[in-house]
Image (cartoon, rainbow, N blue to C red):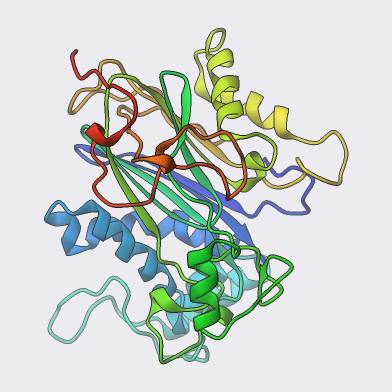
Length: 366
């Protein structure tokens, strides 16, 4: 939903058959323009598949590398051309012309293909876009869920009606974010990085990633995602991925409660998503409820089984129905989510969180 904004800068991806046992869902909240969000929606899941770690079964590493790969791919002549093609009409035309003139053949002299070959051209030194986007991704493989997040979009699971945050909102005032920002030479003013960006992690935003003496994960703003890997159980109802336009209006628990109430009378998930966005939309311009809003709703089949069948096809209005679930993390941060802000109690963004560590008993019987 565009809301009261002059343009829609969000994008999303929903691929229920990333491979025979894997589904991919992603929400990308753009800022400063739409092109980075659209670029990620087009390419990020492809890069997850292509990384050698994915072929070895390490989905967490492959999705982390894919986040960083987005920044790499958006640089140079090829990056400029691809972003231009996703932009407004004038840029699309310019990108098409430059593509005809400068794009090399897809391969080298030995006949080996290269899906992102270097291109010479007038934008060979293009450092990448100054606009950017958040990225909140959920990958379902059999009875496991891998959540990757950079930014303040959020993934929430409903377990027996209780909301648990599966990602952390990356705001500059978080201690770990503040420490990295300051060490990289940045500053925080009025809750914004260098006084302008209200996120501490994002894809794109290359002006904050110019320190040549630091690796990508230690830049003022980084694309480095938190990775949360959790097991699924039969108590899981659904997950929601949504941009901050939704979370500004409803807490995690409020949204879970609202969805449960709607599911009593509505089985079509796209309709439930529309009701959520209508509930969040402000009646007039100004204040909360005016932002772009994108939401993906994934409802789990019961019981959760390896290779369970998928439900309805994804809706363009940002809702999905695949086949699996997830489970939350540990100790205090595994407490139910009840606030919409970065200070909410959340499931940690740590790797390999086992079902046994969750403060809820999970039944695995069919």
